[in-house]
Length: 308
Image (cartoon, rainbow, N blue to C red):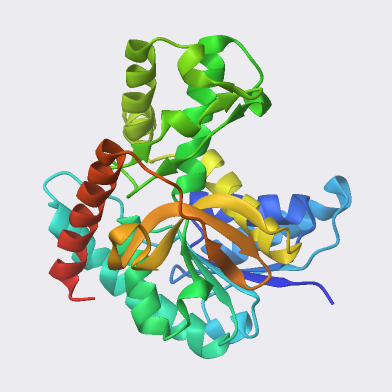
């Protein structure tokens, strides 16, 4: 029997997640959305690509959570983009309501699922999903670090004119301005990146990584990134379904790790069939630890606003 994935939200991120899952034949997919006709239309369109692309997975769109029942993974992508005149707190409260409602329904119909949260502000929305679902912390994961790391690796490979596959590294912390790239743990074909790039170029790459999402928004004028975010989600799902025990940077609920208590913060984790099977604690310098704590404080401010 194939695995089943529910994708909440049939916008660009959600629909592209569904497409990538189908292309890899990882799971049957249910696209669910409050907009009538949109998930159904996109689901049917993806299904009809099957004979050409060679996949046999089942893809449906719906407005009802009953059809999402017994999903193995639920991906939360629905939410409002920030609009002119909307404060950060306005966006936070609006998306809190969306996540609270959607996760409540999804968790009720798929009580054994693993939740992957993509909706922004990511860390606070993951905390909302944890509280609403009542799931154990291992089964609620925020997708941010995989995406941020992909951007970081892309920019390093570009600067050195090497394959992205040669670049290994990760970022810690919250998704956005307070993320914490760790150049000490970044290598290019095993060579420390600090031996290949001067500090000023590394600093510029780190700054560009922090603003990676905004850079794309500014270029598109309307809308935001979805090709790389969807690829990041599917890498996580693949690690779970294939029980790869793959170490990836994800937003995890910390209870003392890195000196942080009761918050979702991006850290390296081992992903397998059980979701987060281990939180990997690495040694940080005082400066890196301070940056991570600053990131946690920013997340704390957000969760305090919505009371989760």
